[in-house]
Length: 268
Image (cartoon, rainbow, N blue to C red; front, side):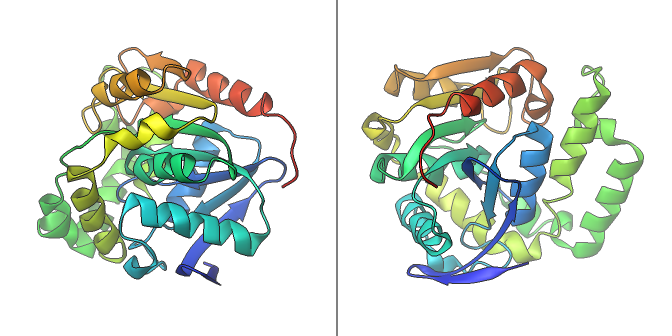
């Protein structure tokens, strides 16, 4: 995967598509591969820029520890790519850096999407992934083989849409192996536990919040808290959806497509 030297440090990233620049910040754990997978699942039409956040895959943790430092690192990446402004989409744990980016650099952020995003202090359990059986590459590979045979294991029997199972599998494929994502996972957990939710009040760009009501990974209260701090934001509530099934929801994807289509034209 390509990497680039920036003012903040080395950063791995991937790109796909054309048109409106969309900086997609992956979840916990993830990487640039997850960013592109999420873009495919969400069916976005844009120039997707998908970095591996610090501590994931080819981006060292030294490139940015805190959400604010990661936000500044993303600006350094955009500088190197010659991108003047972009819409920022933060998924799950990537919501922390995405919100910080919009709060700290509004002149570079055309809009913000918080998708099942961590926006308030939270506990992210890392032990099962860093010290349990799933920390072993062989176990992760065995789990993925099982999920490929039966993708519905990810979404349970309640969700009837096969698209949801396929979408969930596409994301799950980018969670393993854990080892090259371990530093980022541990750091995300540390940052989430002491997240400054007050930064949301500094966001002035157009915001779209998407969240499922049955999300157990990032509870729906994160969306509720975000809306209290961002009264100008638009909230799309996906009733009955969890962390894995929200990305496949037709209403949510249509809302994202409309949001991106309504972005005013501006130089890249």
